[in-house]
Length: 179
Image (tube, rainbow, N blue to C red; front, side, top):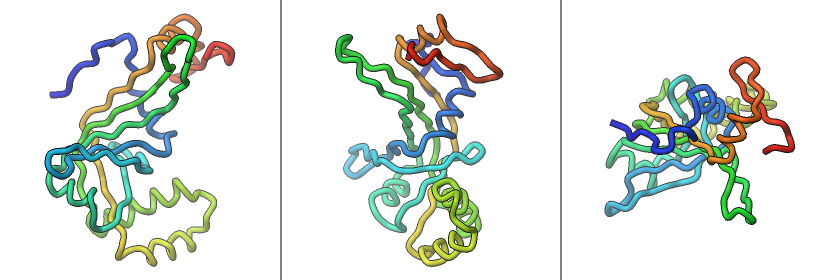
């Protein structure tokens, strides 16, 4: 159903894609917009299990688009370092495909708590709950059930990974001067 990556040597493994999604703070959610135009919106998110969680107003372009079609993609760019002398960039990114739904009240509460802890980890539980309660009626929570994930890095980063990487556990690290 989903296309294979053309440049397989630049693809990222499942663990690396998950790491990027766990560490990222924002991405671009792409939905089916008005009059057949794609609608892509920058948005913060949290990864929870096999789902991505987003927040939204209860009405607006995102909500209308989800009612039109629940199919979506979400892109997170981990790095994008411009290399002007080579007319290129060193990039690493992940694209997620799945279906988005508007969470019901029980799921909405647990999902918004995940987002709140993610973006305000030092806040007190009491203050988070007060904030959630105060914004509840104006807040929608969107849940994207992940169906497919692919990650890709620039050829230069892939080459550096193959030549110079140090593997420790499941993680890969590069010598500082190489990246």
